[in-house]
Structures are given as structure tokens and as C-alpha cells.
Image (cartoon, rainbow, N blue to C red; front, top):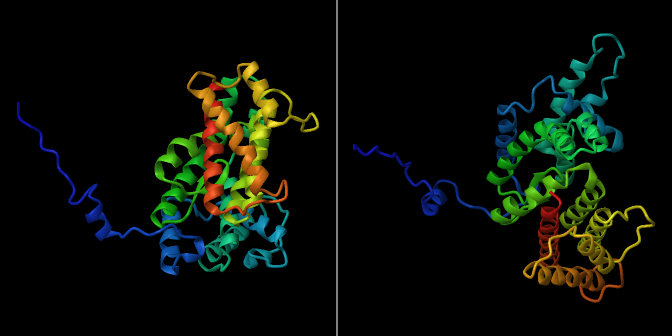
Length: 326
């Protein structure tokens, strides 16, 4: 039998060759990007069809920024156009055109990386179909609820794939998930733990847990490390309150008791292999909270490495517990 030739690209999967083509960079913040790198990234968004002139998502994004940060008024072009409540959408097209220019200006020239990330996160949120998400909140049948969730995040997931490719190519220290921006980790940790776990937590059932995690990640980005530890503990506690049916009951329930209730109700996987791991997590998380968080007087100063380790522990632990509840 004739052997079929397999063509190989020069240097493909050879780190040395690929390093010569495009050198690897250390993880960077948005503020570290050069204007030329931002222009390439913006053009990639355009090429993928996310900055079309009829995008109401861009209009809603700039409207949100101008309303919440009116003193700064990030979208100055849009702000100069008074909305007209006429038939056939009034002057919406003109306003969308102005908002698109404002969006591009913020993307390219805004000095505050924090504002750029707020803009991108709001833009991403606008691609979540809230009608389907609200239906998911009301649906009690798991199969139907999962279908609503999938439809709700369909467009968002495609946008996040585009943005995350840009972030990866630009060596930015963030990735976009259904839970918002999270710190970029080793690729295996990101793909095997963070992304699937946060995807599972996008179920409205875990909405309050997701909110705690969003705050945890935000605190970490802003280097509020003690606060991030407090949020990590709160996220785990809230997760188990929901799991055992105690959410909203005056927020009562220490972790030890909640763990015990979850085990007694067979809500988390317990084997001779997992039991010791759970015991370690049960002791580790409260210990970090007791010595390095804002919940109690700090004994030792929390560092970026401390919080990153704790966040990874939290995400692994949540993934472990969610497997039992799938």
C-alpha cells in the first residue's frame, strides 16, 4: 500500500523556531500593551465581526459607562447625541455609530486599563441572552435548564473565544469566562479546572457563589489580597449553604458543620481517596482566612502567591464537589 505523505509545517511545535517567529513574553497587564498591539487586537475584533455598525451591544456598553461614570463621561461622542423616541428606532443608528467610535477610542487610547477591562466585561455581558437566562432560573428540570443556559451563553462563548485568543497572543494576564475575568494560569489549570468549573457555576442555582468568585478575582487583580481571601472563604461557605439547603437562613453554618451536613446527605463524593483531600481543604481554607484575611486581625501579610494558591484550591475543591451534582 502506498504511504500517504504527511506535510509538516516548518518549525511547527518546535518551541525554538516559534520563539524566533514570535518571542514569548511574560504575562502583562493591559497598560503594558503598545498602541500598535492594541490596534492589531482591535482589528482582530473587527475581522471576526464583533464591531459591526449595527451592534446594539456596543451602544448599551457605552450607555452604561456614561451613566455610571458620568463625571468622566467615557463615551463623549454618544453623550452629545440626544436620544429621539420616534418610530423606526429614532436616531439609534446615529447613536450606535457614535458609540462604536467611542468604544474604539477607549480600546486604543484610554490610559486606565481598569476602565478598558470594565468596558470589555460589559460588552461581553451584553452578549448574554437574559431572556433565556431568566427562563433557566425558573426551570426546575435539569435538562431544560441546561439547554436554556447553553442558549443564553451561546453568543457570549463565541466572543470570549475571540477575546481569549487575543489575550493569549498579547500575553495578557487574564482570561474571560462566564464568571467574568479571572487570572491567567498555566494552560492546563485554566482548561481543565477554571473554565469547566466556572461554566458549571453559570447555572443560576449558583448565582450567589459566582458573585463571590467574581469579587474574589477582582480583589486579586486589584491586589487586595486579604479581601480576596475573605471572598474565597465566603464562596466556599455559600456553595455549601446552597448545597445543603441552608442559604438565606441568616447565613448560618460554619464550614465544618456544612461539610458534615453535605457528607451526611451524600452530596459530595466521599471515598478513601477523597476523604483526606477534603479534610485538607477543610482545614486549609479557614486557616488562611484566620491568619491573612480581613475577616479577622491579620497575623501575616498575604501575598500574590498565597492568594493564587488559595484560589486554585477553591476552584479544584468546587470542581470536585460539582462532579457529584452533575
